[in-house]
Figure 1 (cartoon, rainbow, N blue to C red):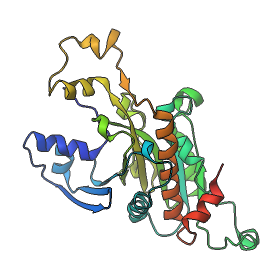
Figure 2 (figure 1 turned 90 degrees about the vertical axis):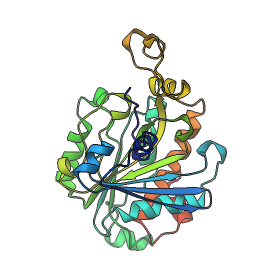
Figure 3 (figure 1 turned 90 degrees about the horizontal axis):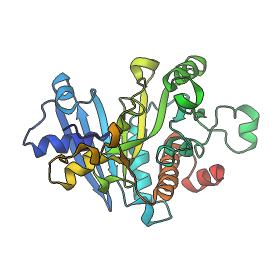
Figure 4 (figure 1 turned 120 degrees about the horizontal axis):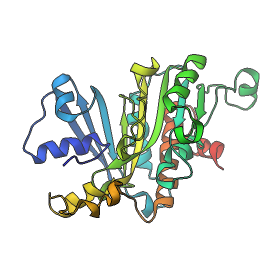
Length: 295
């Protein structure tokens, strides 16, 4: 059975469960209080074949559950900010894109995060100095919606924006699918290989990456759903349900999401957005950035 996951860490775990050591794949892990950071690097084509992921870096930051605490965990924020900054160029304009559909709560992470990212590309010169913001890095932000709303592929919208504003890098934020319920709402994945929107729920769209946009693309995501068939496989100890209709009634794939999904999305968006702000504007402290981006 094909177990659906967007997390490179889970793909690696599945290989290890089968007692297979993936060639061309390196990893290391660090612990910061309750926060665990795992870095996986796919080095060559053998690693690509083993892990089913493009060559590049995949960072998983496991944090305390977003639904347990209303405040931002400082260790979590510091870890996500640090790992994101390490994958971005130090200078130049950055385009931040929040992918997803605000009308579908588990898919609203990207747009909600984008709404909290500090856009600064339009603030320059005397205006910036008068506001005490003379050292801002140029940042542009957009939430392009989804194909069903716009009739335009997200990759096409971003390609046009990149051609026009010529950023040094693009950061895309999107909701992800996990293999395990335990990782929903307590995991952040960061990668420098881009993203294929909708892949985790079987609706793969055009890839957004350096190959398609011509500039570095860093993706950030939080798993918000689990495929029902994948969940059943785990609950049944590695067996598929005998009756496929149980997880795919009338051939329609089912997706499972937590009861507290509204809270999860809101707090995950806050962490992701604040990590982006801190990584892109190191001259401003976290409290100032929060005050500038509050609703």
